[in-house]
Length: 324
Image (cartoon, rainbow, N blue to C red; front, side):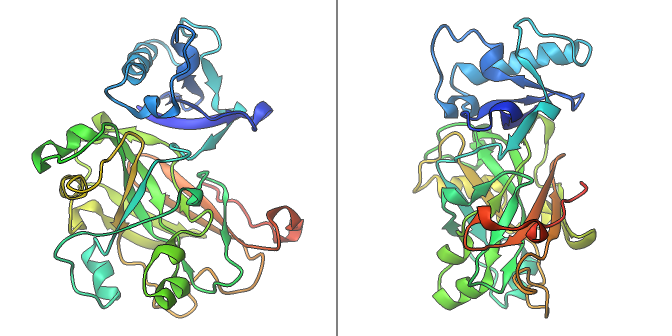
């Protein structure tokens, strides 16, 4: 199942909806419309909770629809919406936590001229980093060295505390694409990573959470990132230093992980030492299309230099869209 968050194009200011993108890639099952809620309104995180009442019900309805002809009406009117009629958001629009892992690929540690860590290096990104899968990434006016980092992200599906490694995958809802956008000049100048990693829009993710039943082994996925059609990163999750099971066991020793929490598992070599490689150079308004993909879905970003306000950007400042 591919879980998405969205708002109707006709009412973009409404609260996000959560649903499943059906295999025809034309329709979305709106979970809240498909289920008889009995007059209640589940909290948003209930749709990411494997132990709550609502997500298992939605999963059964998706399975029933998939067994019928694509696009066939469901048993509740209005529960199927057309993908063309909605704006997709990040699949978890406001995660409780975004936990990132640094230097978790050997080639990235090598290019950073840092030793392979003996235990996971963790940092966080603020929730205001999260942005839509095809929305612009706004480059800070005071940074000239902004980098991409294509990553596999884990979305938690159960409350997890002191989870043994051998049971870690029982707590995972699924996986999604994640771009850990990073202002290298902030990161290196500060001596720690928080500001350089946490600028607004620096966590594009999505477009969907691919549930674990469709990803038998998350350590055998290819991750690639292309910039204006040129492949800049290409590796597999088999190169992770600390696998997903180890990360969940390690993190849950001290942090309670909750449904909807996002763990970005680290990036491969980025080539950030190459001259002219950073997105921050080249002045205002130079558009760059970035595409990354891992578990069966793609993420497209556009990069835009920040101006005094987002609304003041002129038409000439608008970058081109990715064709992905």
